[in-house]
Image (cartoon, rainbow, N blue to C red; front, side, top):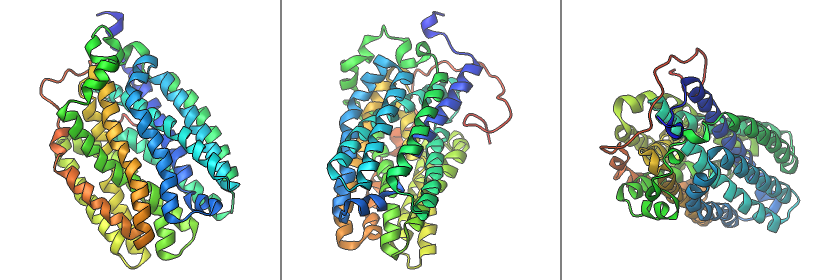
Amino acid sequence: MSPATATPDGRTVRRASYAVFAVFALSGFNFASWASRLPAVQSGLGLRKDQMGLLLFVGAIASVIALPLSGLVVERLGTRVTVWWMAVLNVGGLTVAGISAWTGQLVPTVLGLVVYGIGTAVWDAAMNLEGAAVEQRLGRTVMPRYHAGFSLGTVVAAGLSAILAGADVPIGVHLPVVLALSLVAVAFSVRTFLPREAEPHHAHAEEHHHRGAKGALAAWTEARTLLIGLVVLAAALTEGAANDWVSLAVVDGWDTSEALGALGLGIFVTAMTAMRWVSTRMLDRFGRVAVLRACAVLSVAGLAVFGLAGPLWLALAGVLVWGAGAAVGFPVGMSAASDEPLRAAPRVAVVSTIGYSAFLAGPPLLGLLAEQVGYRHALLVIAVPVVLGLLVVRAAAPPAGARPAEPVAAEPPPDGPGPTLEP
């Protein structure tokens, strides 16, 4: 076996698994630190509901523009370097946006969100590729647990934001401090990613027909990849709508405090975190298709309760069910796009681009609708793409004849918590 295709040992893979979990958590932490303070952003900039939708549209369009190039970037730089530099853009852009919103400056806020959107999109694609590579080396489903790390990061950030909002800490002070600490943590985490030569999309560089611009374009012609993209589109819109609008919907729908709005988002991401953590065994036992179908039903039920319930406590129960249903679509889609490691980079770029288009179209459309019917009633339209995604979930099943990465030799993991361990 050549050095280029050598299989890393079990210890190396487990350390990489913890590192992947950490960068997912940090990405979620950064996002929710911003999303939980959207009421403060709206207040600081003096924007209407529809204008808030257009503001969120800016970051989304920057992400969608950057995503098609993410596969090429990862192939050239590797996941470790890509995640680090995209985290720098993520943190820098959000810091500028937070300070600018606090001081009432719209144009710098928009520019900050453009930089943030680019950094977030490519960081997301790179960490999913690293996660898929580690998952294949481990030989069992772990991708939902990495995405649970993202959700855990949002839970922590939402809780912290609720405390700081309740204490009247301005967003222009809150964001720069927590984001700087997050960037330091990213720097430490990426050091234990898989070695560059162990990345499947790098190990067989001689297979040029899978790489570069030609491979990137070819991925857009594959029916299975496009259908997986539709599954992820529905999941991303379901998850993204909650992340963008739940805090505002709670404040607007029940005329309550910003702290309770942040709590609503916290309930959603807590449900997602729990479901992503326990879903790995369900996926290994029942398969991707059955689990995706069950989660789609939960999403629709939770959306209906939140949008139509009278008392706040019942609506928050709907948020809990909605969060559980929205949990696995995105991580399963990333695993499905990476089933054949040599083509994983361009396929993940395609699937991510389709998925992120939900963030492109969703915020402005929901914002315009919310201007007429209110935030929580506008969110009911998310049930439509969920049902459409349900019709094509079979595309996520592992393809026959896929060429997986070589797993590490069986070795019992150490006791203790972590994304690679069985609960």
